[in-house]
Length: 161
Image (tube, rainbow, N blue to C red):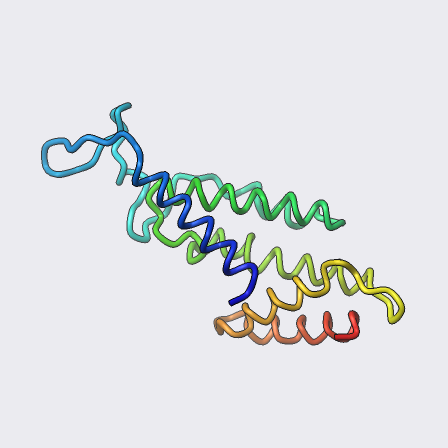
């Protein structure tokens, strides 16, 4: 299991634990409501679109130029995944907007930085994480699988892996 998948699973487990520990009361009709009166299912449970704003994620990912920028974008993605889980999205990784920015977009950006920064004599510190993330995405299949496989080959060549 890759590091990214482990971190994603851990984040999801923690967010589900937080959701399960909230102060909820059952109202008429069996709907759970939070003590503030907001309906828990309103933002979308079970695969519906969440009320979480994803617009800034892609911009932050696209603007990343260094490892610190990538780390900050990853942190924002993990925070957004927690927000989405709190809003009732059971699998944030499968949300199209989240996946485009935080999975595929982050992998593309990290790969571009690694390829540009690596030389035969000096490997970028993100080489292994970029290669692992691209391998995971290529293995998942989908529309981006061929692109992720090609990016993985480019990263492995640039890093000497």
